[in-house]
Length: 366
Image (cartoon, rainbow, N blue to C red; front, side, top):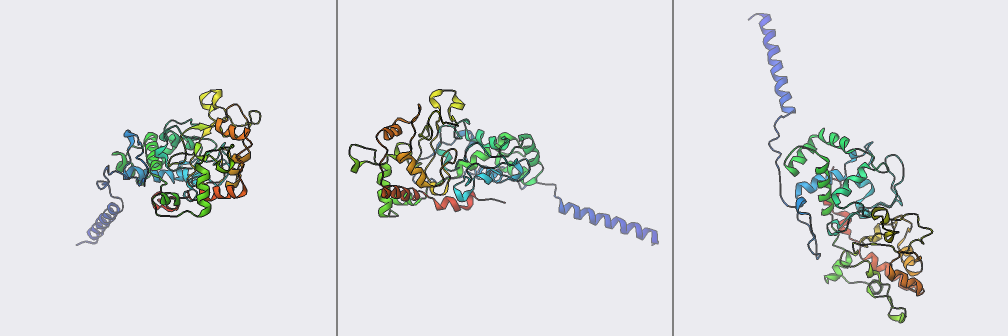
């Protein structure tokens, strides 16, 4: 065989090897990625079944996609922030900053709300209720100039460029097509999957834990009604607003933080346009309140002791303050002793759910 033929055959063989190697590195078939509708089962403890939207029931793959998006920093303008940046698991998915700082180094307008037990919320979202559904809420921080400051169009383009997301949208929705609507549905699924049902208080109700003497006195004060006519029998009446197992009431209320003249944030009124909603904000859950400081819509209170003292002696008169709270004000306050206040704080700490704070199902998947 001539030298020329040998060289040609060698080149052909080399090209064949390179071609084969390239095919191995970049498979063209994604047949292993399939639509998966396996339901995601909520661990709801002793809670009643929540009302999940029938058009977005939880699936394992949908929840996983939402979890990926929740922790995805690419959703922000400069790739520095994710939803989890201001909603951290160790703090019951809220922020320790009074006002979170966005990608443009600007503070937000209100304190970040905790994200858990969303599946039991049935009365709009955000402090002022401006978002009707959780899926609507999920996209607003992404577009807010004070938060992640990114467009949905750019987000879709970023996600489309990554195979892991094309595959996960296929598993969750049966198509590789990525849209902002699907993003919102997946984020809604993940946030609905975050439950807090395993605190010491839950174990106490099941007969699996015993409250200390201070915690038990705090529990009685929490649930007993305010009765200034019989001081020895009077409670703090906290359950007036923080009811049921969720420790909230799905209402918007003015809790006497400011007088009409000193009110800087009109709250719910900004959404409804009704003067009767001035200074009203969504009543938040007291579950995990030990780890969700600072407190109130503007994060004005740094410690639980400050919160208790506000309700004890700090209620301000205003045109829309809750009547029950105003009654305590005109009656001279709750008149709690130092021991009463310490006992209330002790009870509130029994609402901390260590399972929620460490559950790997809610952690960063990357």
